[in-house]
Amino acid sequence: MEQKQPQRFFRSPVGHILIAFAAYLIIMASALFLLRSVMPDEGLHSLAGDVAVSLGQIPEDRGDIPPPPDPVETAVTPRVYPPVRLAVVLGEMGLSRSLTQQAVRDLPDSVSFSFSLYAENLRRQTEDARAAGHDILLEIPLEPENFPDDDPGPAALLTRYGASRNAMLLETAINRVDGFSAVMPWMGSRFINSPEHVDRMMRLLRARDIVFLDSSGLGGLYGDAASTAAENAARRYGLPYLRAHLVLDKTATHDAVTEQLERLAKRARDTDGTAVGLAQPYPATIAALKDWSTTLSDKNITLVPVSEIIKDKQRK
Image (cartoon, rainbow, N blue to C red; front, side):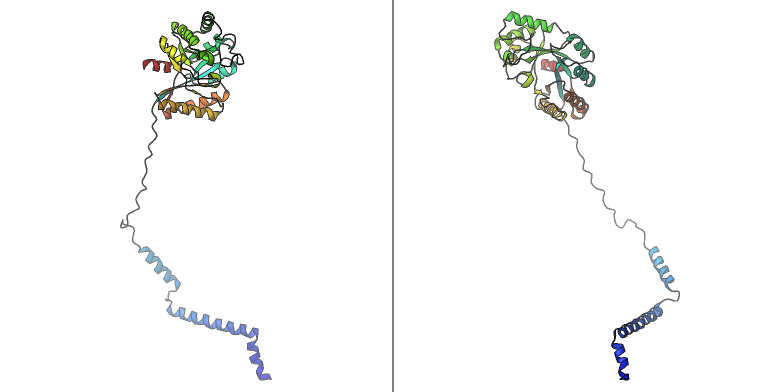
C-alpha cells in the first residue's frame, strides 16, 4: 500500500501543477541557453547600434520619385447680368406722416414717391421728399368699378360728372403740388376703362405736358382691370405715357417683397431693359427695399427715379 502513494500524488491536481511548472522551467532554461549562444559579446546594446547605423544609411530623396501633381483648380466664371434700369414708386405717400418720414430717411433717393391728394399738409410733405432728392408723383383719385362701395373721396373724377366738373377737379389737383414728375391714378378702374372720360383727362394732361403713369390692370389698390383706353388716348394726343408692371407688396413681408423685386428685374432683362414697380410704405416694404438696394451692383441693376424711365421711353 505504501508503494502506490507516489503514483496517487502525481495523478492528483497538485501533482499536475508541479509537473507543468517543472516543464515550464525546463523550457525557459533551454531558451535562455540558446539565446546566450547566439548573442554578441556586447549584448543588446550592440544590436541597437547596428539598427541605428542601418537607419542612418537610408539615402535621401533625390527626386527619383516625382512628387504628386498639384490639384487642378476649376475656374468658376461669375454670372454676368445684362444691365437693367428699374424704377420703384411708393404710392399713398403722405397718409401716414411717420411712415413717409421713415421712407424719406431710410430709402435711397432713387426711389420715387407718389403722394395722395388726401395727405395732411401735402405741399410741405412733398417739399421735404423732393429736398431729399426723391422724384414726386401725384395720385389722381378716379372712379373705381365698384363705386360707391369703394369711395375714392371728394376729389375724385367720376363718370357721372360732366366734362367741365372733371376738368376743374383735375386742375385743382395738379395745382396743389409743384415739381412732380408724373400723375398716376388712385383706384379708377371704371374711369380708366371709359374711353370718353379718359380721353378728356389725357387731353387736359397733354395741355400741361404732364406724364401719365398707368397703374391700371395691376389689381388691388392700383386698379381692378386692364385697359388700353388710357394708352390709346395718350398716343392720340402725344402725351408721355408710362405703364407700371408689377405690384411689389401684395404680400407685405420682407422675403415676398424681395422676391417681387427680383421678378421686376427679370421682367426688365426679358424685355427692353427697364421696368416699373409699385408698392406702399409698409414697414416691411421699406426694410426690404433698403436691404435690396445694397445688392444691386453685383446684379448690374441701376435703381433710377421714375423720371429717368420716362426719358428712356421718350428717346426710343
